[in-house]
Length: 149
Image 1 (spheres, rainbow, N blue to C red):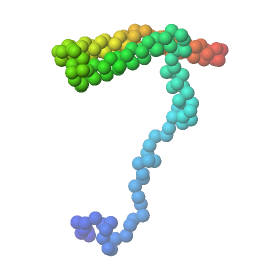
Image 2 (cartoon, one colour):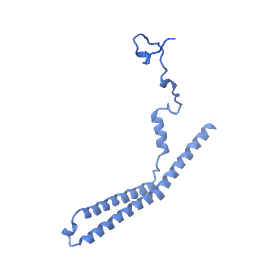
Image 3 (cartoon, rainbow, N blue to C red):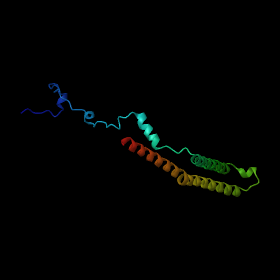
Image 4 (tube, rainbow, N blue to C red):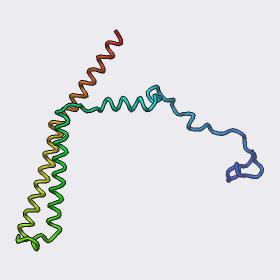
């Protein structure tokens, strides 16, 4: 029996490569299924149809109110922060304590407006979107049934 070197045989002077290599891990990967091989534009089109929103006057009006609530909350909050950052009491005949309480009150108003926009989104807008998507899903399944017949 020959004595083996404690070093890797690959790097020894008197050894030659055996000529066999390991198979790559890439050849062991599973093949793609048909859904993944679809063109991306088709996949995106089906995703867009699934997440569509209704194009009704009620939905547009609710979304417009939602934006108005959020916008007014941002404006009120900016005014509140500006009141605390500047020395408003020096320009107007108002005490610093009154400015502080007014600023705090405006912050609470901004928080209330954000809460109202959240309520509008959860109770009015999202049910409209869910109903619209259910209607689309109902139409989609109806088309498949008529095609099979």
